[in-house]
Image (cartoon, rainbow, N blue to C red; front, side, top):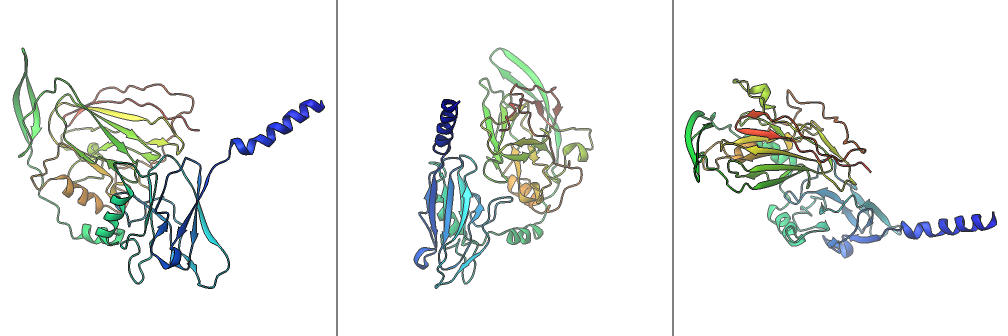
Length: 373
């Protein structure tokens, strides 16, 4: 009995070491500078970063790589920490690393000038494709002016482009000894359909770096596939239309088009396997889509939209499509509640949906369901 108790006690003694995580200290505004020191950190999930505030009034606010000086919806935020020159107490904010990253932060202070615009930004696990230097350079270039209010003002002044002039076209497509005729929808600027003998799978990450599709615009050939990979939080991939970016296509189509919809994909912050949704391209007509999550804030209203085969040389381009979406700040009509059931923790098998033809897309759902830890 004594030996069993001793063994148990020893096991307990080793538990703290087994589960020990690193603590990384970052000075916020040391010696009166508008900087984080160090400006970036390489850490592991569940490590803790302790931001120690120095005299003046700063924040540690999570943002995104593409919008360095704009708070990330649902992201970490220390709030303002005013520290006097005579304070004898350490004021700090602890943030537990919630995954592999990368993660991006900045100071929200704008008085008397934007601290973010002066380069006061911080990166966690930056990558070779998204470096700290690039993130800081963009913050300085924007000078801290890219804000939600500025975006709202810009979108309210935006003039919606004219409606697309659609037409039904017929084309003969050949490949080797095979020839077939295809009927597809088109408008000026849409390329002629071509067959991809070696189909390409285009991957789009959903919510990997904030409220974004990454990339948010691609060109794909007939027979290519597009795979959407969902990352933590709860997003959808829903087909819409150019004039109504934040409304399901089924709710606006006058010709009975249904459109594809992944449904809500809830992903745990600790997930290591990510659910996917795949569509197959069967013509070159533009495809418009968005995330249905109503938030708040509504993800589509924050610009979380994407386009496939948009014609950027015309007025109905992706930039215009996103600008219309940015003007939709409330929950769009026809959206779902967004609660979404979490992926089953007992299943990791692939799910195959029935194919649906709509707006030039053959839909097949491949959901590798993420296990919730």
